[in-house]
Amino acid sequence: MDKRIDVIATVMRLKGSVYDLTELELSYAPPYSSTKDPVNMLGYMAENALSGLSPIASLEDVHLRDTEATVLLDVRSQKEFNAGHIPGAIHIRVDELRGRLNELNSAKPLMVYCQVGYRGNVATRILRQHGFDAANLTGGYKSFEIASFRSSASE
Image (cartoon, rainbow, N blue to C red; front, side, top):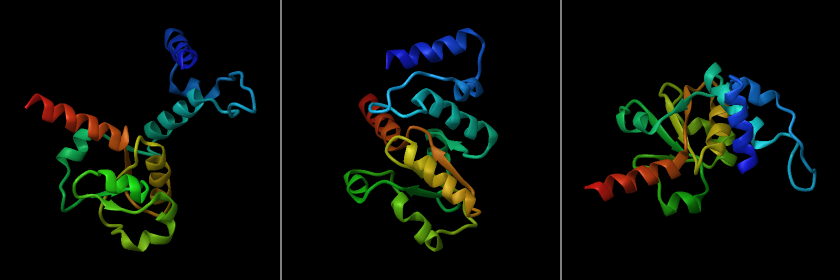
């Protein structure tokens, strides 16, 4: 973890951008990691968000959304959904999404989320490739849960 923070800090110090993160050649050991380091993956995710290929939504967007006009889509497992979800969300597991697209209204924008963001990003890409206006909630349900906890603790 500290190695990755050092790499990102070095790119920042050298006035690099998220695009530079995608081009880094970092060492790896095949039995323990993949050829694309999480630093590279961070760069790809940022690049996709900036280009509009995979738009992102914030917690503020969730709270300000028009609940009649915007669909909140949870793509986590049934067990995760049952353990807690954002009120008003519908549930379709990311693995089932392609087969259940007909259950979604393509005329309404979608805010997609998973636990922390990865599956939400995958689901957002699937939806956008099928003509949906979809954005991935940054930080996923974890961010919502933390923000909700902080909000209730301060009351």
